[in-house]
Length: 270
Image (cartoon, rainbow, N blue to C red; front, top):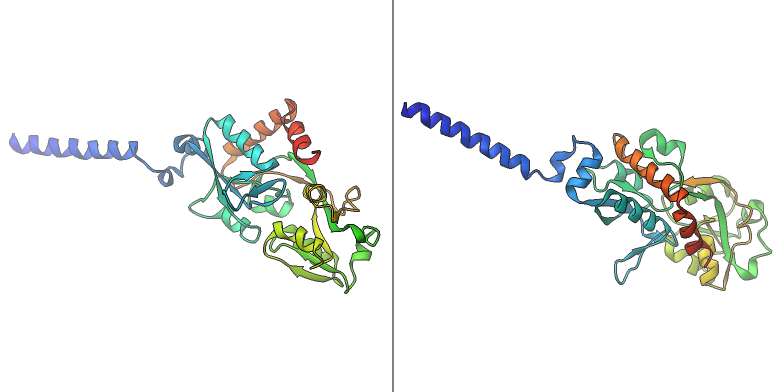
């Protein structure tokens, strides 16, 4: 009888430990559960962003504070989820690897990420919340010099791009005769153009107006005639269809209730 009681106590102790463990499970052991459940369990939405792309995603170096159009979109998604938000630093050269990392370092990435067929082959992308397209920044004094890609595609024209992103790919593919300069920090390139360290920056129609407004040495002469037409969306791992659906629903709501329009006015029409 004593032996049976001892065995029963041992079984109850083991079951009790198992129950406690399931209650204190950390986020990594919840990876088999739907993404939305993991996020609400954690209480925080983890968002990957480069923080180098004014006015969409920028991290102030002195304070570590993030601001921008896309940052506010991410905050709206977190608010709709009823959780907090934490921004995780990524970069253009490592963006794909960071999104696909196991274990995951963030739930999704945002910040001027163009929707492409290549990205959709290996990852999930939300519907668009902002139109985009390739254009240039140059010095005001050179505004009349650049009317087309042919005007830029010359050995004497120094074209500066950030590494690893679509701007660099565009420059390499479309400007084979120009002198391509790769600079590691995207946010520094406009100032370098203004100072004469390079002649042209390949950028986007979402980024160029900000620098034209904040630095009177700069111009975007082809702003109304972008070289490409694209859309910007949220990027995440496959297998997170529940989160993708929620993000798309939130974007649709922001389009309907005027939130995106107000953000557009705030960041592009100051």
